Structure formats: structure tokens, C-alpha cells
Image 1 (tube, chains in turn blue, green):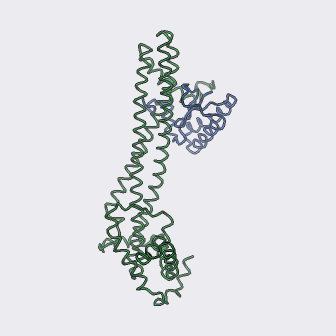
Image 2 (spheres, chains in turn orange, yellow; image 1 turned 90 degrees about the horizontal axis):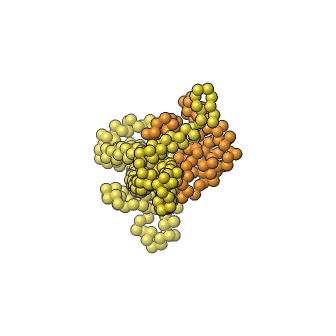
Image 3 (cartoon, helix red, strand yellow; image 1 turned 90 degrees about the vertical axis):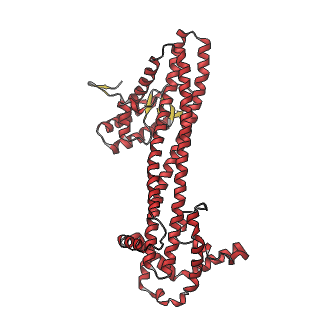
Amino acid sequence: MIVRILGEGQFRVDDEATAELNQLDAVLEAAVEHNDEAAFSSALTNLLAQVRAHGSPLPPDILEESELILPHEDSSMDEVRKLLTDEGLIPG
Amino acid sequence: MLMKGTAARMGVMKRVSLVFKAKANKALDKMEDPRETLDYSYQRQLELLTKVRRGVADVATSRKRVELQMNQLQQQANKLQDQARKALSMGREDLAREALTRKSSAQSQLDDLQTQYAQLQAEEEKLTVASQRLQAKVDAFRTRKETIKATYTAAEAQTRINEAFSGISEEMGDVGMAIQRAEDKTAQMQARAGAIDELMASGALDDVGGRRDDIQSELDIMSANSDVERELAMLKGELTTGAPKQLEGGAQNGASQGAQANQAPQQSPQEQGPYAPQYAPPQQNQQGQLNQQAPQNQAQQQAQPAGLPVSDLPGLQDEPQDGDRS
């Protein structure tokens, strides 16, 4: 499975890691829903760390779509919210 | 995959990727001849490459501006520090206090700029990497584009075109966001740099000169500043124990410069003052305005130690306040 971290690049991640990623992702989503900035920040950090730990960077000349896309490391909750609801954040 | 009730709970990761996909599909749908898509997309990619490279250059320009300001502020802080020492040795504690107050203000601007500088550096690095990644993907796309055009009929090509297009489109979205973020950070930085330019132009960080009223009023406002009090105490202590330090510096001069020691015997001790190690003294000499007064200052400072033999100030050494230094 290919996962992209915005601003960082794509990773090939073992499918076995999916369950764990989904779990962390659920925490992240709940934090956004509950407007909990502190929980959001740590959930995002954890999630990205897991992707990096379980994944290997995809060579940059590979043209493949990512199955999952993760926000920037230093994203604010507001930015993520816009990313989810508004295409305006992605230029072009 | 994870559905609960009516709300589709698919997680942040999936939702973001869907937003990206929707964007790519929308662009694809606009194309009538799939093979035209390839050329059109390739043009867009080249444009984006140019844009991201320009972004790198813009951030670098901004970073250099901050660097220049940091050097100016550092020079100013160093000079105010020297002036405070000089003022105190002449018994002008009020002037010394004012100089330290201004130095403290310059220093806090400097600290702030250093944080900003690091952020700009990080942004520049990210954009550089992003542009390299995009370049690799654009190259891959060009190769695949030629293959598709040569090998497949328009109908057959559709699936392959979609694949190539989706792959590059996601990267382009990512890079586009990176450029936007860098632009935002640069804009913030420029606003800040502009504010500091204004502050410097206002004279708030100027060296203490003949504007007596200005000095006095600022002195009154800032007299409660504990930083200033602490530094004053340190400088006082330095004065009482000043002789050994100068010998130390003089010895280094003698060892390293030999016969030249007579020409500028006091420069080295100045630079080795208690505040110098916090920030390396800037080595630029392009600030004509700042340097104009330097020879004068040095000449005065050279004269001071001779006019202040420690033996003439026995009271200072026995002062009970000296205990406060710790």
C-alpha cells in the first residue's frame, strides 16, 4: 500500500500495518471532530511516525497514486479541516 | 470500509486522498482527446517546476534579508554593550542603563529573528526537495507519455493515461501546497522584517548619543527592567575586577600578534567581553553608518583603563553589593 505524507513524499507501507494506522487515524479524526488541539497534535505525530517506521520511501520517479494521504507534519487542525472539506487548499 | 450508522467514518487519510482524486478526475473529465491530456498535463508540470524553483529562490532572498538584519542588530547590540561599559567607567550610570536597555531590546528582536530564520531555512529545504521530487516525476511522466503515444490507439491509451495522470496530479497538488505554505511563511517574515526596519529607523535601538531627553524618558520607563539591573550589576563587578581580564586579553594579543600588539591593544579584550560569546560578532564591514563611530569609540575605550587605575577605587572592591553578583 502506498501512503503519502504531504510535504514529505510517498512511502510503501506493509499491509499488516494497516490496522494500526487505521486505529491512529481514528484518534486523529476524533480529535478534529472534538476540536481538541492537543490530542490532534499528538495523534498526527504518532500517525506519521508509524508510517515512517513501517514504510520505505518510494523512489521519486515512480508514478503511482497513493491509497492514503496524510497531512503535513506541522499542520494545524484548521488546515486539516480545510483539507478535508475544501478543495481550495489544493492548488491547480 | 469503516462505516458507522449514517456517518461515513473513513478516517482522515482516506478522505484526504479522495479529495486529491476528485481533483484529478475533474481535470481529466475536461479533456476530450485523452492523448491531448498528456501534452496538456506535461505543460502544466513544466510550469509548476518553474514555479517551485522560483519559490525556492524567493525564500532564499527572504532568508538573506533576515540574515542582513540579524547582522545589523548584532552589531548594534555589541556597540551598545561597549557604550554601556564606557558610560559606567565614566560614572554615567544613567547612560549605561539606557544603553543596556536598548541593547536588551535589540537582543530580543535578534532572538525573534533567529527563530524566523530557522523556519525559513527549513522551508527552503522542503521546497528544494519538493522540486527535485517533482522533477523526477515529470521525467518519468514524459517517458511514459511518449510510450503511450507511440504504442496505443486513443481508445487503448485511456487507462494508461489515467494512471499516469493521477500519479503526477497528486504530486502536483502536494508541491502546489508546499509552494503556498512557503509563500505564506515568507509573507509573515517580510511583515516582521519590515516592522524591525521601522523600529531601527525610529531610533529605538540607536546608540546612545546626544539626545538627552529621549534617553531620560526611556530610562524612567525601563528602570524596572530586571535584565538591565542584572547586567548593570555584572558590569560593576567587571569594573572592580577589570584589571586581570585586561591582562589576560593583552597576553593573548602579545602571543598571537607580536609586534602589532601596540597598534590595537584594546580590541581583543573588547571582543572577549562577557556578552560576546552569546553571538559571534558579525564580521561585515558594510555598515558605513555603524562603523563611522567605531574608531572614536575604540580610541575612547583605550583611554579609559589608564584613567581608571583600580588602586584609585578602593571603595568599589569592598562594596557589600558585590555579594549580589551570585
